Length: 88
Image (cartoon, rainbow, N blue to C red):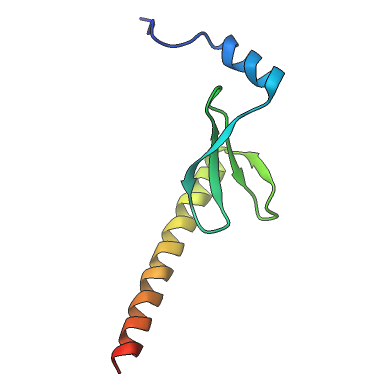
């Protein structure tokens, strides 16, 4: 069963090969680590430890999810700590 509302797969790839990808931020993991998605061909990228863009593999998705969880808990802890120190 095919979905007739989807574009053929070759049109976005031709567009991206001619004009280049048009990446948008799809997820902010931390201040420095983000996930990007091409709005035409849906190719996904992320930043690595050196700050370069690399393809988003399942391994990097898992790393980004763990990193996001650690970052959020650290930010919550710092917020609580600063709130407690401002009261005293």
